[in-house]
Length: 332
Ligand code: SF4
Image (spheres, rainbow, N blue to C red):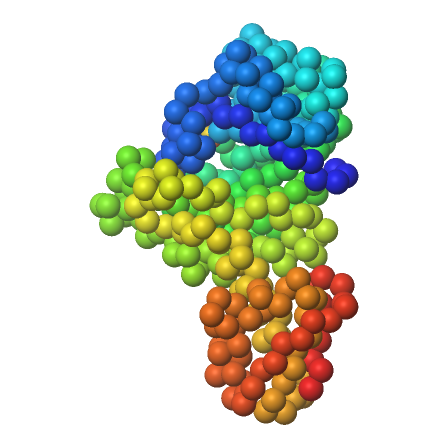
């Protein structure tokens, strides 16, 4: 996939979506009331061109791009063409549903310079997909992922945790199955209950227990380790926070720094494993890469307190190591 480019996101909320997924309100998630049209694409890109250097990537997010009527897809993509030709844009990307991808739709994307296809897989358990009102199966995701890769596109997979009928075990299994498809990246979105969605009605009726921030951080930490082991970058954990979105949240795993919480949990679990496996005294020093010191310490040094309590330690000191990212050492 090469170095990360600046992504310019433009939103087509719910365009093309053939089903109303129970959890979804793309207008709240994206903050975009209306989908962009071709004129808006031109206007947004002209503004971006004045602010950013060349080499950016335009992304159409928030809908089911390949299920939009073909003429509208082409109008949106064609509006980006001049910016691609003069080099301001290096590539385009779109997000869509697994059951709305076929060779014809991929060919159209390729013609207009789309390099990356993001598939909203959400879960790999058909029961969970049914309860979420997704209208597709895990087999659709496997088939679509194979088509996208065979078509020469970069594949990014998106999944959710804490959907109705799911739990940590099924969430982990979803992550394992998606990583086995060898995407170029994975995004994980713990379920947030947004007002005025079908999921919110279920939650209010006591028919759905929302995943807590704590539970989401724990399962995302485990998924992060799996992704690292598989060599797949975890590109995002949690929805992009915004004041508008925060106002719409009724329950669930919404936290402006969910990714940091998950990373902090990941480092806690690493330290616990190390201390369990290695003889140590009552005072220990843990060395982690400098960029991971605050994640190892945790919010308000919570991880340090947990380690002291769990292992009966008098003190836990942290120091920066020159080791590769992901590595932790016990120095004393
Ligand atoms: S989750 Fe995706 S497919 Fe479902 S309604 Fe939202 S944007 Fe459409």
